[in-house]
Length: 119
Image 1 (tube, rainbow, N blue to C red):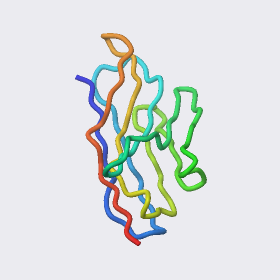
Image 2 (tube, rainbow, N blue to C red):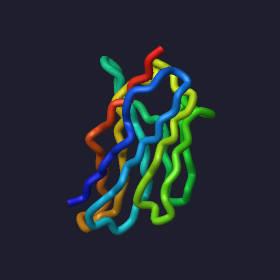
Image 3 (cartoon, rainbow, N blue to C red):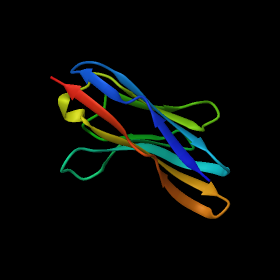
Image 4 (cartoon, rainbow, N blue to C red):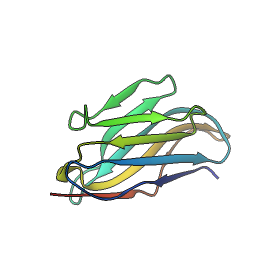
């Protein structure tokens, strides 16, 4: 059973920082890409940042220069460092992974972690 386990959300004042973590578990043959999405109340889920197996990163324009996506040496855990947080960053953040597993190429979601930024 493949799982994505997120941690690191919480409440912070504007200008503060948080780091989210997403660890994979289960039988995974390879990781194609991992990323973070977020969904604010009443809004659609949007891509925040992603990183490919080759280390290529992509960021939403709204977070460029403030957020950094990275992964550990084994590539099994992805992080999102969020600096200079703004109230508009408040959302549930979801980890996403495109993985090769025994059943083929599959896409997985974490359970979500709440990030709340107060002004």
